Image: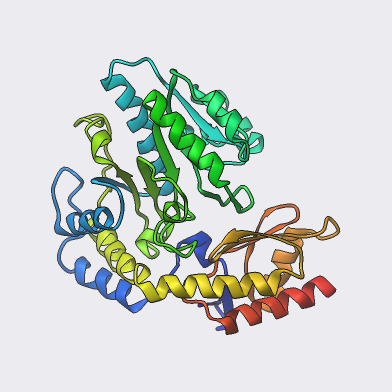
Length: 360
């Protein structure tokens, strides 16, 4: 749960490397998997089949709706693969459908395709013109989303819980509307679970707490336990859309990264790990409720402070004065992404530091 600086001082990590270190730092199962794999095979490229990638793909599909997995190196790359899959599926059907509907406040990555799916002006403006074909729906209006899905739509792309946008859970009626609209026009429903997946909200996949099942789920961050890896999980009826040569990744499915991910997935998917995430998340919510408006699920929580508070200044003070790591997603919004191994004692330490800083 702690990082140490050059002087040996300990810092409580309640951000977990932006949601990556969900099992804390240097978990023994992950370290052992990396050491063992690095002595045997480090890289071949994804031209070849390797045991770690096969085992990880089998485990991801066993525990989800998916039948196929494409491995890459990050969440942005996983989303790029999903975007290309949706358009390739339309192409394969002989359809001219190319539009993708996304939600306001969404964040899907910083590569050009993923950035184009991220309707945040401050992030997009320096890099215009972007990739065409993205339309933005309100995050909380099912009727407007349904109206935007037409015969020109090849996919709807949603974070079930929006992370960078301020930790907003998308309402169930919007998710249901997206599922029904996609079914009607033959479009893909894509869930970006790069941040909210893999135990972060208290279930292995965030979609498991919703009334719908998507066609595609993208993963990264916590999947590798600290090593770079992304994955695009695809339902059987759509997996064939990406033909050989359509897409690729030199480092995708890297043996060391997939071995580490298999170890991380084994620990995260344990019922006791997920139960702890829910229980400690509830406790953290109860401790934070007196500080401001709360949003989130499990151990993915946003705290909206009064406008008198500068969230970024508080983040810096918590780091410099209290040796606690959190971050801000807006001028008045603090985000908490503790490792899934966090205890109530860690929550108490965080909240004591936060209370003292808000009082000062």
